[in-house]
Image (cartoon, rainbow, N blue to C red; front, side, top):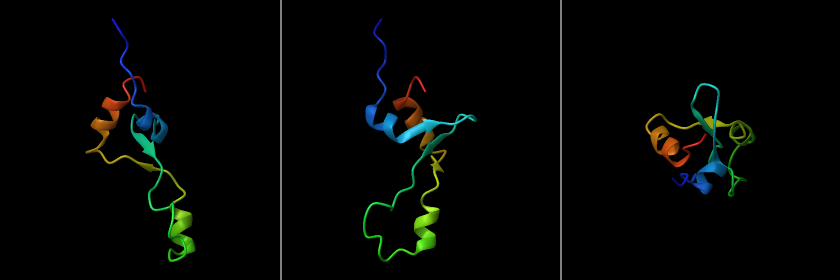
Length: 65
């Protein structure tokens, strides 16, 4: 029986933490940074967790995580 493949794009973006939730990077950090405050850019460095409504889709894309 062939193995299932992980979604390579999702594998680069999401990691499972100890509780079984998925962590991901924050958005809004790529460009147009001059108008964003230093505090806002600093707080966007921290990783976020995937919303519970989206977690089943991420889990389906990453069957072996």
